[in-house]
Image (tube, rainbow over all chains, first blue to last red; front, side):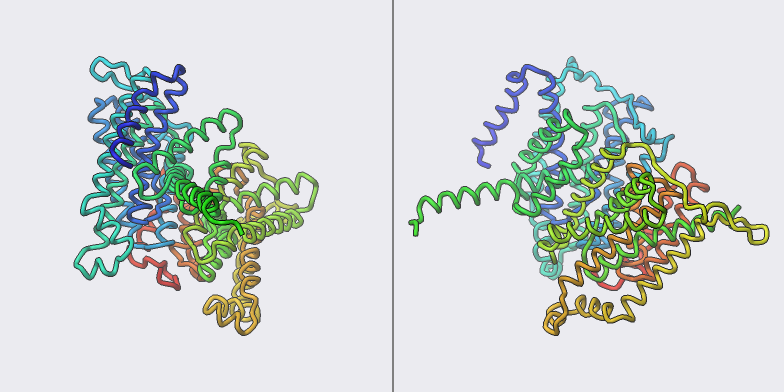
Length: 316
Length: 284
């Protein structure tokens, strides 16, 4: 994406709430932004590290739960609650990474799925801590300076600032030497080891860094809904960013944002008619993997190429 | 009380083994990771409930669950998995997609309340040995798991079909060259494992009942069984099932709210010492 494109996109994002009359649509835009942070954090894993984690909801969900418990139940000041939630989620992400990185490839997927499911099970069962299946309420959006965060438009702008910062830092990370090492560990782990790099450590840092931004998305999610339930730790929550990233295009900056927009819009449209969102998510996932493994962007450009080729090529 | 709990946990382990043996086998031998496995268990349970409601006898309901799920497995294999052979991460993701669809459609059809039916009259009640009382149905489950384990062992190690499977797994090109229909064998074993999972789902209804979320629980437990026991090993699946069965039954008694956390223990230990599982065959 060139610089002009970024500025245009940002301008559009700033103008959006002014153009949309209904607060319902502003809320959808806020959800897209939060989902895009979560998806971009997953992009570090699947795109740059090719670590297909099926338990990425762990950091997201733990962040959401911890901020709700800290600020909602124990009444901690919000900055402290957020810091505690992020620190707790980072610890969980680091612990999970330490275990799951003992395995590779398909065993890695299974182990991440198992540990993610374990957290989901605990969240559903531990009534005293997490409220069990009923979830937890009690988190309220704080007053920020003179801003009323309960207003959808104001909250949207706060989230926009967070999202811009998140995408910037994740882009910086991908462009940094560490990001290059992560891709090196993806493509040529043996050579990288021969060059004296610790592939395990590189992947560990990648997982923890991705976990951090997933936790940020989780905290923002908790403030948006003012409610958490075991759903935030479920397989669906782990799968959604994966579908978003593959749909939008792997290892690009715009991919996760485009994918998040498509998936959140689809979810909103479908959920207002039937309770069949997981079915649609499942079908979307199957369709993407069967028919367009490169993602929507690659498929579109291939179609475009084909159309152009047909115009140029002589018929015969 | 502890003996009864021990028997309960063995009965649960038996159920788990019935559900996992096929999963572990197709994953370990053929490298097909079927993540829709928990959802197939759930679907088997609901189909069993539907069959019993139609007035079918117990064993017919078990067969109905097994056969329908096997047919579904055949469709999934023919439509999706055949095109993804050797692309394991794509297989994982596609089968997860399938499991989301199965679980959600089951919820839309059968609703959110737990459903169950009673075991047939012959298995109701309990058996007295001295001063110990054992529910009959649980003994039946344990007997079936032992029988299935023995049958699968004989099938893989002692029969011509088993030899063909092992040949196809070790060197599929050479197996093809000597005239073994590798594709058919893979599809056949896949459907067989789906049959077992579906039938296990029906058998589980009298003790566990069937409810939304059961798919996630079973998937988690079978993953732990495979991670602990190692993929592709029947002994591993058996040991793993027993470990998980014990923890899953005694966990809630010892730590009521955090039974799931107890399940983390065997996984953590095994991952730290044997990343491929205790009886795992392949280096991953």
